[in-house]
Length: 113
Image (cartoon, rainbow, N blue to C red; front, side, top):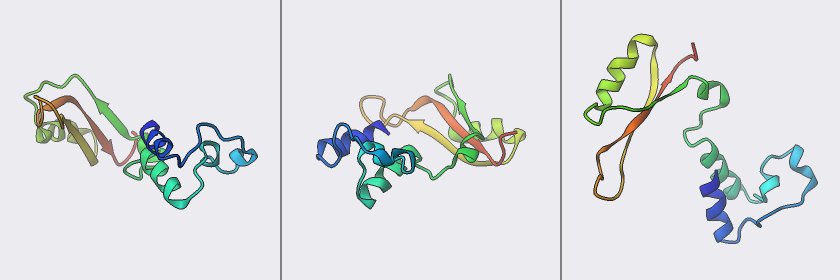
């Protein structure tokens, strides 16, 4: 959320503060997102994969992973506990560790149980 808001503020598309009364009916008016493009960027920043709150309740953070564990290992370890619909295995994208695992992942099941 912060990144999208900062990007839009840098381009002077969003004022630092907005004093509008319709904030209760429109959550994006509170931060000054006027155009459809700005609203879309903010929605993607808030919910990048289009997961609603019900589905995000079934999203599990897996931390402190050994750096030798692969994406397939994570899936194998967590698949006995339910049907996995998404898995994010994060890697470093820059610097000397580029391409190496970050040591954590996210696993999303079909249900929160």
